[in-house]
Amino acid sequence: SGCYILRPWSYKIWELIQDWFNVQIKKLGVENSYFPMFVSKDRLEKEKDHVEGFAPEVAWVTHSGDGELAAPIAVRPTSETIMYPAFADWIRSHRDLPLKLNQWSNVVRWEFKDPTPFLRTREFLWQEGHTAHASHEDADKMVMEALDLYRRVYEELLAIPVIPGYKTEKEKFAGGHRTTTVEAYIPVSGRAIQGATSHDLGQNFGKMFDINYQDEKGETQIAWQTSWGLTTRTIGVMVMVHGDDTGLVLPPRVAPLQAVIIPIVSKTCPLENLSDYCEDILKNLEEKGIRSKLDDRSIYNPGWKYAHWEQKGVPIRIEVGPRDLEKKQARLVVRFGGEKIDVDVSSIADTISTKLEEIQSNMFTKAKEFRDSHLVKVTDWKDFVPNLELHNLVLTPWCGGEHTDWEEWVKEKSREESLQNAGLEGEDARAATSVAAKTLCIPFTQPELEEGMKCIASGLEAKCWVLWGRSY
Image (spheres, rainbow, N blue to C red):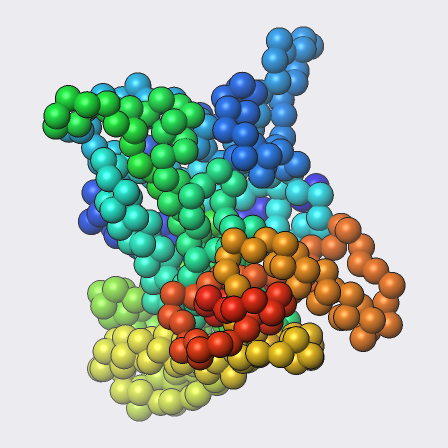
């Protein structure tokens, strides 16, 4: 219960993200590694704020075979407390820094809210990067470099616009110094969703786990650390942003198949007549590096195949019939938008390669234009909840990310007004989504803050703009 299966089609999308991401992190000097999935109770509880943040979600192993363990062992909810004792052993000198490691692994967080595949489940896959540095400046640079890779995963691979920013004190990573995030928008529900986070851990974990080193002067210093993670939630976000009533609509860069060739066979034109022609097209596409397939299954008719591959979101369908054979052409049908074009078979690989880039760009543009049309500024509380009801993300003047009390006030007040407007008395605590607003981030790119502008909640002088929304 609360878990899900990644079948080959979805796992291939995850592999394509992995392949791209591995290349990028290696450019930054990050190496892949793997650490155990179990952590002892005393290590997990060593950092008080950290364990309090994860305590409700930790899964514990209490038995081995027929016997009870002397002490319970936690299944990793995240790996700081697993990895950092090893960091303390490995880091002795400034020459050992920076230490930059990444691991691809599974994580267990025992959610009690209603599970949603890809978005909120008890087990999920992710990458988690962990680094140690000799200076805060170097650590902060790593935080921003990792966050920018997450932005690129969403924008360049998944064709999803995101808003980068800082989390407030209330929403930051438990035990960390500061959290950065990329936030996405889901058009069909008007909700935001956290895309990925990159954390400046400061020296907090270094103090807890004695990650000390000797600097150039022979003096003992504490390492500065970062951690950052991206999960299979990416796939769910992509499905919700781009999917339609027919099924998936996949951005070409993460599509397991970018083009599928479907012979249009009939009694008067059997597969044998089209087979060599289709095989030549397939060969040309593969030589161009286009992920392609010839669907020559005889048990299904062309119409069934059209529907099948449309549902799976393949960016381009290539239809080949007797008239195409005659004219030395093929018909391309684009999944995104439904465009149909006849192309000369001699240039089909180049045409499709160009078309795939065009589709990728158009998908991002459409998603961004829709997101931007639902991004509004609000400076008066009376306009706040009405804009949530319009499926908008709301930018408001704010008295500062440290004001957790006023942040909680907005959450409860927006919940109360939203339920009242809907004629409801309350929410089910198990519900994965709420009508309440929460802070998404303090965007890096800030609109101009006029002198004397007041916080929408407290009435105190505003220090920044903060982004709110209903969220997953």
